[in-house]
Amino acid sequence: MENTLENKAAVKNGVSRMLFAVLSMLLEVAVILWLIFFAGQKAGWIYTIFHILASVLVLAIYGSHKTASIRMTWMLVILMFPIFGTALYFLIGLNGYTMAMRKRYEDIDKILMPMLPANDEVAEEAQARDGRLGGIVNYIRHQANYPVYKNTKIEYYDDGEKGFEAQKRDLAKAEKFIFMEYHAIEDAECWHEMRDILAERAKAGVEVRVFYDDMGSLGFINTDFVKRTESYGIQCRVFNPFAPGLNLFLNNRDHRKITVIDGKVGFTGGYNLANEYFHRTEPFGFWKDTGIRLEGDAVQSLTVTFLEMWNAVAANDNDDREFKKYLASSNTEYVLEKNNIEIGEEKAAQLEKDATEYFDKMKEEIAPQERYLKETTAVSGDHLGFVQPYADSPMDEVQVGEDVYISMAESAQKYAWFVTPYLIITDEMCHAFSLAARRGVDVRIITPGIPDKKIVYSVTRSYYNGLARNGVRIFEYTPGFCHCKMAITDDIMAICGTINLDYRSLYHHFENGCLYADCGAVMDTKKDFEETFAQSKEVTDFYAKGRGAFMRFGQMLLRLAAPLM
Image (cartoon, rainbow, N blue to C red; front, side, top):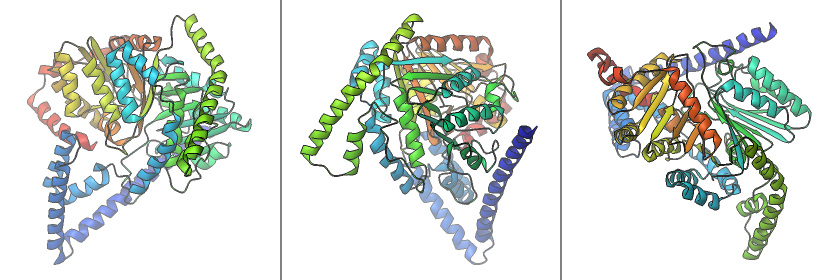
């Protein structure tokens, strides 16, 4: 009963805080509009200035590198409503990071990213295995700076609850450190089960860190969540707190889901740490979600992704100064010294020699783990394929998540299957999926049969016609809400992670995914797709030709607003 009352209070507090912030923002907008329209003789020239600013902004948007569908929407909104449209663009249309924030990310990346192994020989092996795989592997290496690995065991979970239970078992075995980064945490039963494990490990001397997005958790937790979490010995930080006032970074959220245990075991996938993801509550029918477990070298990339966000999120935090204990198999000492002090050629040569000796030593220590992985996978009839965790950030102009999905569709020869909770995509992605289908590739997309957000669901359906009439097959998952974010092509490679097929994930959020290939997890993923198709209703024919005039008009308006969602 105490937990139940606490949970209700937490939700009430979070919703109240959100309403207060929204009302405060609306009040600010109302004051601005009042000054513009009721400022007496000055109102005329103020209005003229806004029109000029709107015209300049439209030209700037037209000349920007944004995708055409995003540019068109904002240009129309600003031209039709100069004052409102201009204000809205500056509030949510920009990836509104400040230069200081961008510099924090750049500075930490200069230290962290070089610590990851290049693994050029693994990339060459992937290229030799299949040119299509090699192309995507190299894109992620060069554009996102994340290497591809072997020596990593990967296990696929076709249900979020299975991943959750496996995660708790591994957390209980942690010896050195635990890192957890999630878009949403609900202060309820499932989190309490995990928190108790974290508290026990923290008491045993394990370093435990939890990092969550404030917007994603807003209706789930109380404002004193950080304080109560830290009372258990767990370090806790919040990404981009939601508060009233002008916040140009408000539109950019941390949508990642990552757990790292001792740098050896990692988890990611679509599920957050809330009851509905694990069937404790089912407000939208059966909640379909998926995840993966990594064990081996590739966990290094998840560790770096977490450390980047932990150390870059705020300027006034006490950040890490020593990374060796988290990335034991990387050239940490050399990279840190190289980036923090001026060194001569002799010193650099000595550091490089020391680094080589360090790598050789670590290879000897890692060898038993590699043998264990090879032995355990051999027993199951599997083998260690290619694994490439990666992250996407709105801090640059590279849409890694979108590009990887498009590349999978463009490279497919037999089939390309996708599943997403929301389908709100650019014209470029629509064209890539349609072109693949016209080439004879079996392109399929699964979306939910029961929506969690009705307006967004209507926007999702507005995309069906353009895809279906070009041969893309559309399925709606009938048992409930399908929250998975995955793709698979030609029995060769698959992706599981946090990246939805929508503008928020592809352009505005911090996201992460994992490409895996030439391993048993790919076929496990395919089997799950096939079972999900069997539980879904195909709506391709209806949306290809069965829409009335009223539906077409409504969907046209929804498509226009899609980039704003």
